[in-house]
Image (cartoon, rainbow, N blue to C red; front, side, top):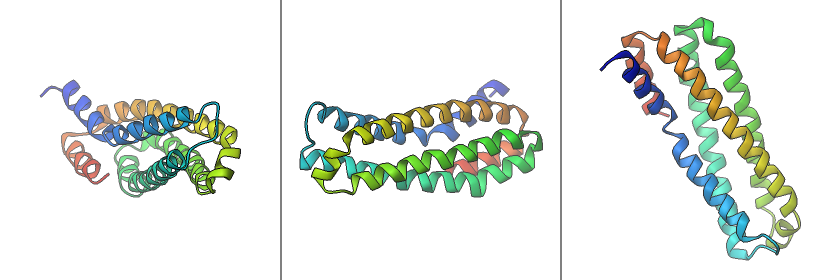
Length: 164
């Protein structure tokens, strides 16, 4: 395996956790689309609330693992990347904040949730934008990281990534 293939493999492994979240976002977007022009049904509200709770919990767990395990290892291995890695961690706060707020809105009863749909849609749009920007930034940082790691460090990162 050449250096480019190893780099691509490492990045793919680290970004793999984004696939379920992207799928969850698509499902939530679909539920919101069902409510266009009217009040949400109890069933649509329940699916949105359950999806947002699951997404929030998965995000918090994933980001915690990155910040407690992967990021400290990367900063130790590549101190010049500290600013970029710190920016990724800081973005986690905004993304989680939006997810927590969406979950709080979704916890309302169906009538109250329906009255807040404009706010829910606006917050969801900001959440999606923040998540997309973070994903692009993370891919760029991880590409740089992959170039700077030794083979042994790459193996250690792969082990850490499996635990994410």
